[in-house]
Image (cartoon, rainbow, N blue to C red):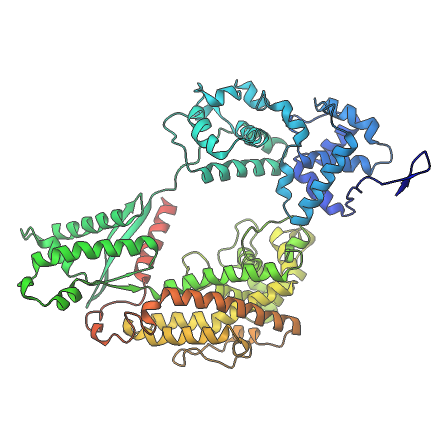
Length: 635
């Protein structure tokens, strides 16, 4: 309460939120897009930089307010009018300056509390109405007005630069224009018919990324970026599909085709083209040769995605219609036998199970971390401006570690040779980090185990770095990440899963087992994961073996995972494993249902002969795609 002139007590206005955290004030200043020197010139000489676009964002107004508030020579009443004048802005007469500044402070406080600093890029609403008649200085220079957005213009994609797109994005926000209107009305009037409107999400992401990049650049790089012609976002490049055949002699590639639309119909057309190409290699003149070849396709193996499921159904119908034409005495065959002959055995790629387990585990880790972290921040996020989106902090740490020290490290920031030297000189060991390129299966689990093993080796490396190299962003982030016990526990949990689940599973898939012998392994996997999601202690205590035929390898990584650790990390590891096991159980129940009790391939002894040549994974086409990827990069 405060005393009025009459002596009565009156209620004080809502207290403005003060940020004693100077680091956050620096973050807000960085978001404003102005340098510290530019702010100083504005406050002392009322001078504005060339990149000023006339749009007063919340971040910029808060930066100015914060500087004045913490100055011994400045005041709101004396300095804000000339500052607004220099910015060519007039405070709306109905707006109280103190009330406006308190509102801005509350907005900034909420942004800090909810970790949504990107909201500070929005224009202060009290000033937005002054710009409805123009879009921005760059657009005005090119005679692009709000009116012309609703009618055809003489502009082309080459006449639009990044600065104009950024202004259009701000105008869209301040005028409450929907993205649907941008796509359906603005886009056709901005671009020629050669540039058909991409999906709304593509436009939104593209424009948002341009705005964010503009905030990160300064001086000449910023000027060059703004003047660069706008690059229209295009549809994703064409994809590729490959067909292979497994016979008694082994697995061979039949074709590799590009494909613009991945659908059941397009895949069926590619299948027909593949068979026709094979027939052309045979000089026999037989009009039914394609159908005869089709009839020999009895088994398929896919990743069971929705497109492939629809494709197998379509392929099965085409094949069923072809069988009567190429099978002798078809009419005399029993209906049950006809059904058996017409049915395609669509088997599931075992390695894609591991791939899906990776995604389910990462999703579980993200949710677990969000609950465990009191303020939602982990590792580097507590000390620096960093947004990891929906990515798990554990997965981000592992990926960053590999970017810095892995076999295919970052070209500019990587320290792989230094790391190898430290390992050889101080620890007499080698790096266990693996490349992500060309290795899709099990890598997040294996690298999590490797990073947990190398965490102390990283500290040895850091102690040998000079002050300049200590400023490496990867180094600074990893120092913070590897001090967070939640991240360490998540990493350890992923490493334990690698040792006890995914690596033995990969070994089983790569063995010489018959494809139908996998059902007993999948069944045991399903049962054990169900047990471990209730009590993961056997995993934490290293007192269990998933597959006796494929036991964990007791190497130095295994030893590191089971070394004595703090009680808190031990408890957090159990929690992380329990949460991850729930997700893995859902994945296994869905993906290999056909191999579990009650499933089509469970104990299917009658199918062993006709599935004899079937592999247990789709590794062969994965290798073909890897080769194609390498060729495309070199071309």
